[in-house]
Every structure is written in structure tokens, then in C-alpha cells.
Figure 1 (cartoon, helix red, strand yellow):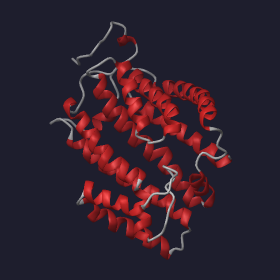
Figure 2 (figure 1 turned 90 degrees about the vertical axis):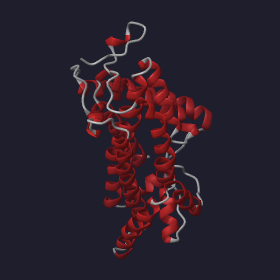
Figure 3 (figure 1 turned 45 degrees about the vertical axis):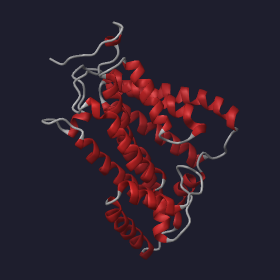
Figure 4 (figure 1 turned 60 degrees about the horizontal axis):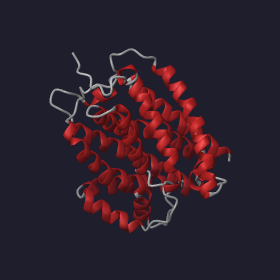
Length: 294
């Protein structure tokens, strides 16, 4: 029988997460540190700059929206990831040489580069999480639904509706502090309108790969680990704060924190990672549509 961690006597009615997790609880922070500093920051925020360095072309990173000196990230990758740069560089070079032969435009290169980088980050993260799994457990146990039967599709629909409402309300606050932006991300906008290939790459990254990757890390791994040792509400707040901070965007911190809380509550309430993945995917799709139409 699974042991359930209960706090304050009233949490069982909502959260269905248990203390029976497939990895060592003490490995949480060391694993998250490895993910953040060895994978997420170098690849997620420096990936396109690495590509531009390899191609000897300047590039504007669509995630940070600031000019980045490419050599810094290549140096970081070689120092932090070390031997990984041995196979990352040939992969990047091969993919871009093919697209250069096909005459792909710059924005299409950026979109396809983003796709390659995200796939690499997803594969490397799966390998990292696998190393934290207890003996006789599988990595796929992260995606295993809780035996408590709850309609995760209904929860996803409700969660998405609440998320859109709360993001709209917080955007009013953010616009008051930072001013209204006509287009949330000019580079993303350009990639969406450039070509069908570029648009398809963006949709794949933002609506499929990113939701799976981030929900697996921040909810399936981090939130489940925290909820096994503390009150689930505290676990949701902590995981949401780290999720928001990991995007390195001060002006979007509040909205990202709200998104993290809704996704965390959805996962706690259903015990099914599919629920938070679906909400995340729908929200990103909604954001792409807004960016495309803006």
C-alpha cells in the first residue's frame, strides 16, 4: 500500500500525490543544479548563439531578446559540459550545412536550430533524470498516472480557462509596470510568418517538446519530490517560483509564476502529468497565435 504524506488534515481531498516516488529524494537539488547549469541555461539561452558562432554569423536570441556574445556560450559549454561539445558541434554544423545547401533563409535556420537544440536538451534531460532513478524503477514512472481516478481532461479544460483569466489579469499589472508591448517577441513573430517549415518547427518546439520537457522536470520530478516531504501547497509555490526564475525574464516573472502554480495544482489534483502537459501545450499554442496575429 502506498504511503501518503498528509499535512494539516485537509490536503488529501485535493492532492493525490504520494511519497512513493521512483527516485531518491536527496538527489533533487543536485539533479536540478545539473539540469539548470549544464543543460537549460547553456542550451536554452545560449543555443542559438552557439550556432551563430559556428556559422560565423550574428544572431539575436529569441528567448532572451538581447544580443549575446556567442563565444561566451561556446566557452561555457566546453567548460561546463566538457566532452558534450565534442558531439554537439558536429550535430549543429551538419544540420546547418544541409540547410545552407538547400538555401534556407536566416529565420528558417533559427527555427530549425531551435528545434535541434530543444531535442538535444530533451534527450540529455531524459538521460540525467534516468541517472536519479532508484533501482528497479523506470524513467517512464514519471508519466505514470496516480491510481486515484480523476478526470484529467476535465481538469485540463478548467485549468486552461483559469490560466488564461489569471494571465490576462496579471498582464494588466505587468503592462502598468513595464508598458504595453506591440509584439511579445519580434524574432518569434518573424519565424512564424517566414515559411511553413519555420512555422512547423516553432509549433513543434513550443507546443510539443517544451511542454513535455518542462512538465517532466518541474512538475513530474521537482514538484513530486517536494510534495513527498512537505505540504503540497508549499511544494507548488516553490516549484512555480523556480520554474518562473528559470526563464530569466524579470518582466514576465509574475505571469510565469501564475502559470507554474496552475500547472502544479493541476498535477497535484489529478496525479497525471498529461494534464499539466496539455494545459502547457494549449497555453503555448495560444501564445503563438497571439504573436502571429499581433
